[in-house]
Image (cartoon, rainbow, N blue to C red; front, side):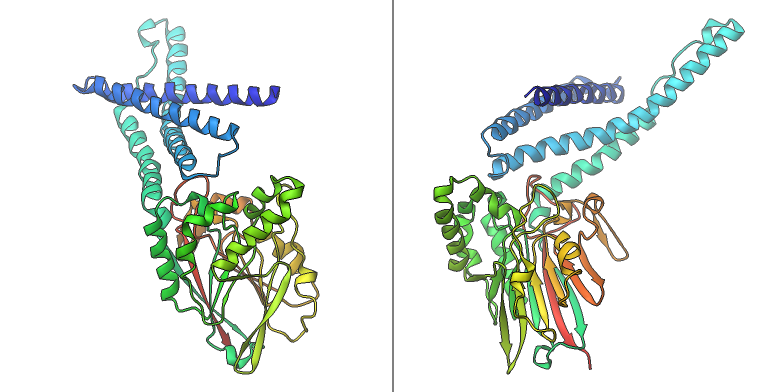
Length: 418
């Protein structure tokens, strides 16, 4: 308890310092401007809004609903946008003020040496640097607002073609569409989500695979969207596995109610037309040939993540010459269990990372802060002739937006090498 209060005091102190230092920069920028007092009014008004957001977020955390609703995510988005924008602004001010401090020390020493007190002064802030700091701060401000207003529903199709010598010829050209991390509790625009569903169907998938995190924490979060997810179609079926967030509501239920809770949750997948692969596999038949589709429940390397996935159980009975596709929510499972396994898994599909919902994705260059936590964080990876594809997610969590890491619909075309 004491540590939590200490942490809260540190945060409040940081918040106050950030606001004071930002205001000093705003005052320097507005000095002598006829609208100077209105700049101050606007600045103090935003402090009230951010303080209100902090209060609502804190009370939401206390009630355990931090990630359960779109409104809580909105408050968090306001806070993050404000803090990131001000950190950028203050960082550039700090660089300038550091130079001013060094200049002041130099002038002070020189004044002592020459006995000329007129030289003892602290240089003032230069308007050019103030303006540069403001422009730089505007970049995350505009980007994050765009991410919250538009980016979170800017569905993007990623096309991947993979060729294998041992892919049955009947599956040459077979199209797998993957989505992941729906996080239905975060949605706030059903029409926008429906456009994403329509875009998935427009890819005309042979197989539709969902790799976990249907909800943020409670099974009923999906209820308002079940009708549109039911519209998803695929020639050879729709399959799903669970992600870490799919268990959080289950863990909070008393032992006597756990089975009923889980059965009801699984029935929601079934109502939407998905077949669950909870540590099991099925054979997908086409023109007299087949491939194996396996799925594991969540297994994550992080110490707080559920480790329920059982690869051995999922592929029990799979033969060495079977072409195998595996659904596993967390990409860390690939390194810890799939690659070391004796059985060859040709393609593993994962999600979980979201690309941190912030980053850069352009030809030849990909970056996101999440890469420092997850080495396999987005896109295609290959080792030992086995592939892993990490989808950056269909939905969003906590920060109610996406910047650069747009929601993804992955289209994987399998090809048979001659």
